[in-house]
Image 1 (cartoon, helix red, strand yellow):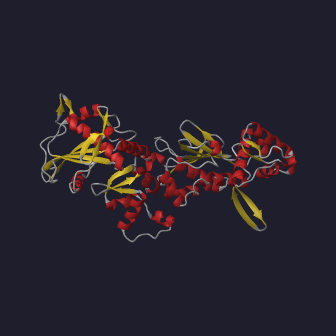
Image 2 (cartoon, helix red, strand yellow):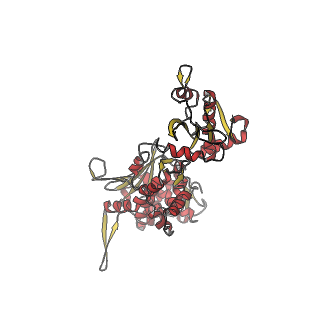
Image 3 (cartoon, helix red, strand yellow):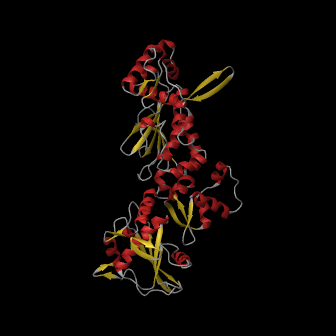
Length: 482
């Protein structure tokens, strides 16, 4: 591991041992080490630190560097190496690393302990915690145990580390902050220290115990100059594939992003707009080109895929596929809300910090308004409503180009009718035969076919009459849940 000497010199400046730091001279009692690893891992999770530490060769009271004659590699428990013995008795979620470093000509052993994830760490099936500088059974402190579980459950992707031990002078070579200040309309600070202050406050970078910095997943996924610099995130770059027809037989163009989402989003939108079919409209002497898809809907669909993806699903990232008559946006993970309540339910996201920052950077709309805007935009273009398809570990949103009403599958007509009712409901209105004809761009002569659609949507319990006693020709309809 790099920069161990920096880490040790930084840690010995601590005024005393803490819940996440333990100094030893030569005490290598295996049972003590096992309990301390357990307690320190849990303590790190409790206070929100990524790591805790045990150091041998440091005088306990003065923190003087005295060195140790022992090596973690030579210590045996019976005939078993201590590291193997510890891993056997600690719970599977315990993670730690032994290292040696020479400082001032003296050998120092450094044990780096990673925070507890998913559940508290145990040693010999018992959990421990640090109370001040002492290791105690976790069960003796029920209030702390409850707090620990809360912290473990709330640990999120955005706060985890994408790259550790980055020198202050290197941070700006990995991350581009210019767009952050442009989009938040904050004046760019004149010096690097002020920039780092903003980034630390946003949770984009974290200052480490060794004086260096870590770049968080939040910082890397949004502001990376090159996502390939962050191996754990490189597969989360958005990919675009354009096909010749309506199947995946022949690929016309393919693009894989390598920039953070903030840096690449507008270029991605421009690239997509260039791939989409367009039609020329002439009004008087003015000739205009109009896309067959509303860019507002595409923008929201792509932003939603970025925000709501499940980052714990490795090996895949957001994908945009352009076909002759449809656009498909796929992301890892499934929604946290019911599909049929996507418009009216309070929004939920796995990645709240990511969603919040992307909204502040004006990459997407205010919380909860994205699907409203997508649906309204598609209606204004007289397109079928955006469709949501769920798979075992992914979600796909399909945007359709203009299709004659008679060629729209009945299932999609009913879904369009239902979302039209949802949009009307949130504005305090119901749908009518007339509003639905207008929504599909149909003439008055299509009243009978629209009535049949409404009747089937009622039978399938997607919508219901607002007032069943109203005369049929004046009937209005609302979503089933209203």
